[in-house]
Length: 436
Image (cartoon, rainbow, N blue to C red):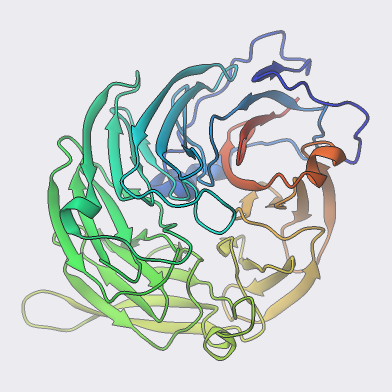
């Protein structure tokens, strides 16, 4: 809502009077990974508010030490965030907050193995961590990986550059972690030592490591259900690849793709997923990206012995582009957003464009479809709430911070949905939005 009369306090944590009767008592639902991971299907049951402002439907805000671009993850009442600190990103930070009231429970600092200038042109704690009941697993663009208990005690740590070679990339790494019950998976796509690897959650030991062709990319892997199993699907700078999460074996590859350097593949039911691609800031990937915003399907092939697979295109949409946020599928439509703030609504069955519409702001965070609406989180704090469906209908526009703060260049990077709202993360702040 466009009301900016009241400036939020600069205190690290601030509770606002929103009819909660003092300290919040949240309904708990885990959001343990980037875009929810395997918990994302529960989002259908959530009931977030449609409207909020700096003085309305904000339970609390908390300051984050350092600066980070990862999304918050949630297990129970524990909210975990990562950041980097220092002029040369000397420190990797992991912090835990209370979901109920935003109190910082603990913060841990670890030395970085790759010290580069801390500025706008390199990733800053961009990989989103994963979490479970045993604690948090965090990976940084420096190659450092740590596992901590819910109380902040160190379980294990790894230095992947010391083990497997130095990362080399103009803007750092951005791939978020993926997990299943026993393993955490790391994608390290860069111009140096490039690979995908699985690590034992209990010990940190390497289960398998599969080398990849060096390339510049910041996309994240995802687990796509295929029958009774899953494939780790990676869409990254010139190929889309599927891996066995148990062995690391390459199951299939698809190379008729381009401009797929940021967007994460998004599972759409069994064996299907959306791919997003961008022409690039200067149009350098225009031709490849034109053919690469698409729905794909993993198809088993008849074979003696182990099943073999191929990935096929279900449809391509030559108009849509996807930049920082990934595409989503919701209620029969796919939604793509690009760096210019243009929203593309596409029929999920056939790939035809239902409409295009320009949003007030471009977005870094991936949109979410919840209830009757799609929430598009603009990078400068304006969230556009549109009705799901084949016609554009703007339901609400909500500004999270006051205009003077937006002018200062604060960026909204990550969102974790809750049963009654959202956790929203900027480089230096964490907000909890709640239903009244």
